[in-house]
Amino acid sequence: MIKDIYLAGGCFWGVEAYLERINGVIETTVGYANGDKENPKYQEISMTGHVETVHVKYDSSVISLKNLLNHFFKVIDPTSLNKQGNDRGTQYRTGIYYVDNTEKEMIDEFINDKQTELTREIVTEVCPLDNYYLAENYHQDYLKKNPSGYCHINLNDFPEEIVDHE
Image (tube, rainbow, N blue to C red; front, side):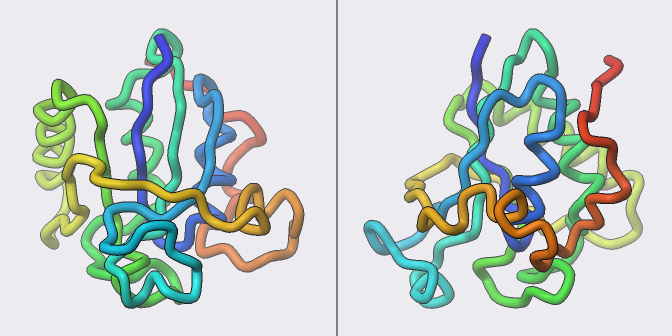
């Protein structure tokens, strides 16, 4: 069954490049979520409340949302407010934005379980997706087009395809 989730983890270039390596992820796009302006441009999002976000389409018969979130939490610092790596600002906050209200309880349980493993408070926001606008074309698959581009995630730490063993 094909499902959707929207994940924000700092600069979306590396998050997208990492997530698309996970077996069961069918498609990714990058864009701007949950802000106050329709169709924002990259240069505006620090003032519009949007967050750099990856839209993930995945096959839930191959990977569960819980295991997808486990992979996501391997490459973010969920205790860092409005920054990941060298990127700072509200547009770089971490977030899980859902479109299926039945997933909220599972996401909250996941966050609560992860919190027991950490000494600092998780600040990753969890809320319904209010809006999502595709980023400009040059941002889509940016690190494929620009292999030496900046990324706060060390993609060399992960194999080309990440197979989940549930």
